[in-house]
Amino acid sequence: MTDKLERGAQIVINNWVEIKSGDRLLIVTSEKYMAEADALKKFAFEKNASVDIMIVEKSGIQVGVFFDENVDIFDGYNAIIGATDYSLITTHAAKRAIENGNKFLSLPLSVNNNKPMLSYDFITMDTKKSKMMAMVVMKYISNSSMIQITTKAGTNLKVSKQGRNPGFFNGVVKDGNGYSSASFEIYVPIEESKTEGIMVVDGSLGYLGKPQNPIKIKFSGGKIIEIEQNSGGKALKEYIEKYKDSNMYIASEFGIGLNSYSKCRGNCYIEDESSYGTFHIGLGRNIALGGIQEASGHFDLVSLEPDIYADNRRIMQQGRFIVPEPQIY
Image (cartoon, rainbow, N blue to C red; front, side, top):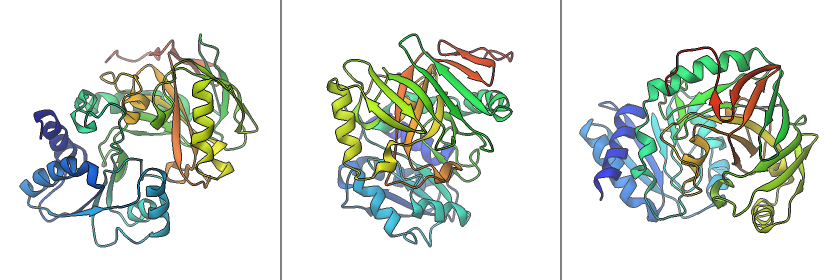
């Protein structure tokens, strides 16, 4: 077990979930992530918590399906860490746990370079700084009804958020009213039928990693209607089709990365979407984020250095926030 992996596990237990004496913690994981689970368990024991580890046999996309079908599986625990390949934050079991007042952290561990996610430096980002910037930017987003995103690479996209409230993740469950994700981001559960325009994906294809070349994706009526068929575009379409669910083509989330320690390199899904200087569009389900879209899963497409407008006010220019507030990055 590496020192950096233990450092990451300690941050998760002590700072993010804030495990306390008497807590009943469930760590959901798989065989390939037992080193991470054991490290989390070690630091939870130091807090005098009781800890169970649930090893799921399902992998990849099927992990989410399992936790949709077994909605009461987290009953009996007041703290849950989903340390699997994919995020569990949008599953029905997670939704039930959160509604019951339990602490829930989605900790997707999927990487493309065999380096344990808990050993990445982005985990050490000051959560107070990310919260401070999120609260500032969310004021402008909350008061808008339309968000427009452009990039020099060719993105020109409009998303609608009438009646939808932004939120943020920074790992810390109390900052998210009892639940969070390991990603550092502002998120908006956008209106599911109103996204229009072009997104050029030059950052990350979510779990598929960084595309060799930028991919032009066209949205109309809230969903993807065309994917450029270069090598990355073909891989993306094949991946979406594996869900066997047309709702996975629906744009359901707009997000802005908040983590200045993160680098969007395609090595780690959570690091990519967390990277300051990026935006992402989430596809598929958004019910846990405050939307109404059901789907078989959720994943994000990440683009670099956006200009972002909340209604007619520019809040980000080429990947840098320009709201008139103290500079903290």
